[in-house]
Structure formats: C-alpha cells, structure tokens
Image (cartoon, rainbow, N blue to C red; front, side, top):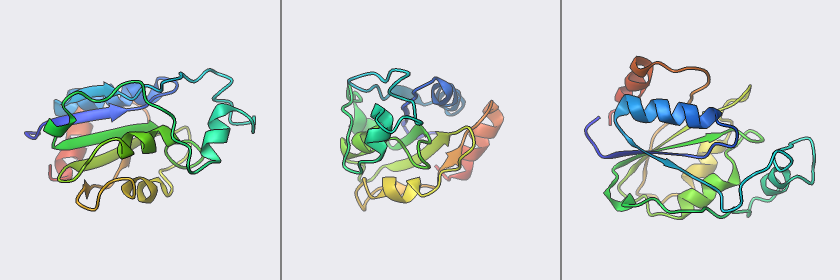
Length: 161
C-alpha cells in the first residue's frame, strides 16, 4: 500500500484492538486508538442491562460519546480504515462521533469490525451517511479470529488502494 494510511479503531475488550494492530502491520499503516473520554466499565458494557451505558447509547441514535484525543495530522491521510466491535448489529455510537469529527472528503474510508456472531448488518449504510458525499467509501469486512498478514494484505490490495 503506497498511500498514507491510518487504521483507527475502538475496542472495548481488546478483540478489535488485536485485529487493528494486525491490519496496520500488514498494510504498513499508522495506528490510532479511538479512546472514549469516559472509559467503559464492565457494567457499562452489560448489554443485558437496559440501563447500562452502552444500552442507553445504542438506543439513542443521537448519542455521541466524547473522544479523548484527535488524530494528529488527519489531513495527511489518504486512506482510513475504521475498526469497531459490532454492538446491537451496528457500530458503537463512538464511531459516529469519530466520523463526524473529521472531513473525509477526498479520502478513502474502509470499515472493519469484529463480533462474536453478528455480521455488519446495516452499519455501513449508517456510517457512510456520517461522511461527506466526496468520501470514497469502500465495502467493509469482518475480521474475526486471527488474520494472517497475507490475508489482510490481499484484502487491502483487492480494494484497489
């Protein structure tokens, strides 16, 4: 991959972090963790509790959890992979916060996700709306389990980046 590339990710339990680190290494990208201003506790992530923080956020389409830090030099990146766990069949609301925090016009954005059993569902359509019409949005991929460097490079190369 020759274009300046960033892998930005949110990971609540470490699963997406492992996938993001493997992807960044495989494609020679910089890495940025999307860290919430207020970290999620185990209780916050209890999807069986309707009053847990994550449940409340996911039930509110307007929820935008704050992010602790911005990407340094975001304007310099041409390709941005955005990774996240699947929550309630879509990306966590913090990913919408992230996408709405930058102008992705002229950039290529590629989502990737991890999940214990769900696919991306309708998340790509939702996230694409958070970027400008001038964003080159590419189809995402589930990166569950261990991904080889070769498989990750092959996927990225197949995107025509």
